[in-house]
Image 1 (cartoon, helix red, strand yellow):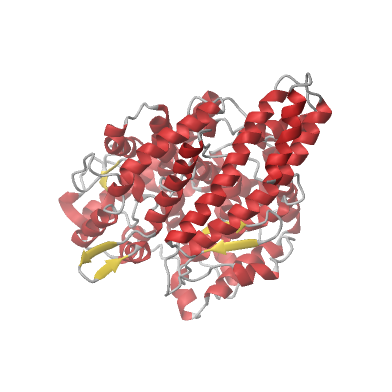
Image 2 (cartoon, one colour; image 1 turned 30 degrees about the vertical axis):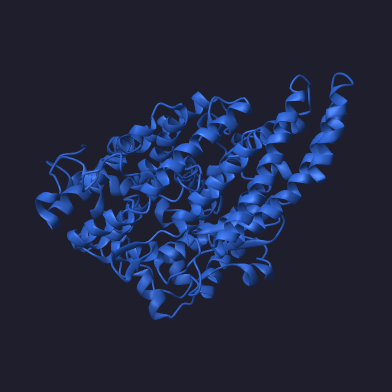
Length: 591
């Protein structure tokens, strides 16, 4: 009711003549107050839906989400009235961000609006409930499949799991097609060509220029990826024989990950001779009996060492840290600020693994960022761009060096630098391998939203892009009866993915700048900012800006640069690139 009242004065004002700056200011004040309340309501309903998946919680979350989205769409449409008014920079930016604040815009038609929000909630829940049942009475959820993928080297078992997980998504196909239609209708009503064009408009530059910027960044790192791909391919061919081609794409099921998006689980197969780092973080966590709360405390303590304040008491009371035994939940890790102030939470099904230890740092990066900008006006309570949000926790994870593990008491001493090739390879299998995957998800969706990829070619286009960017191929025949994009959470959940590609670029750029601020010397991959208040001061200054300024200003605050720069990745992995090229000499590269 509150937001309906907020709209009424401006409808009346529209009939009274040209709008003024003061009317615009009053409009935005009322909008921000309404969105503050509606966002908290939707956040609470979504939290319950994600942590207690039932028919009723899905309906409640859909209803709350619809109220928030519809109000935001109304406000964005009302904001058009002020398009011809010369506004102060802060108000002009708020007007722009208001129009770009949604990833999904509901159509004006109430029936279509309700249908779209039901589809969105249902698609996410279908993914959350997804299981593969290889035989009656024995079903595997995503956690089970992920664990087996990480450890198994049986190609038949891996192929079965690869096929099995993708049985969850064909039922989503028609709902997703309708979702695209309705989402595009809402975006067009707001003045955008389609939903993908709306997403690309959020980056403080024209959509076409942003697309070219992504191409530029990819070209900077592509040679490193091609060298890594060539090495992984011939090593897997040594292990598996002719099922891995000498010069073609790598079969997707052999890369240690459900989606082949990162390859760190292959490290034991790929490790250089004599390059054993001398420790296994997963083994250390298990041997120390490090519980889930202790793992989260380690993550918090890193941020405290930089000068951040502790997490609130409610964080520990309200977060979901473990998978419940009595109900369905969405285990995909995420960070929440329910009330946009300090009701911070993470949702994870924590296991004592190195992967989850790193993920905790990543999710806490979101939480500390969310709290850093909580004194900004409501429309500025977000990251400079969405890649910044994803990058912060990962920037901290780059400081999880052997020296840092010594400081935690996990290791008696840091390994000799001669072991660095192995450490760099392990990190490249996680970070560099991800880059093309991080790019292609939205390449597919942008083309789907624009109509360049029609529904009858959803799956073919998906695998064409995977081949183009990753050099990976499906290990079994695929057809349009399949819907393999739906087997990746961010597609049915409608979460933009380019942010993850940007985050993988930005985290190294941030790390290089922060290491310099901390006065660290030596190879970039051995630098840790743990305990540096000077690095923390620069980081906090950037985070507190929120979205109040263009991302170029925020980037300059931290790094002194106004352009995203992938050369920091090349700096970080320079010793590895040299080693990979030596190992690959005389062997095919590319696909």
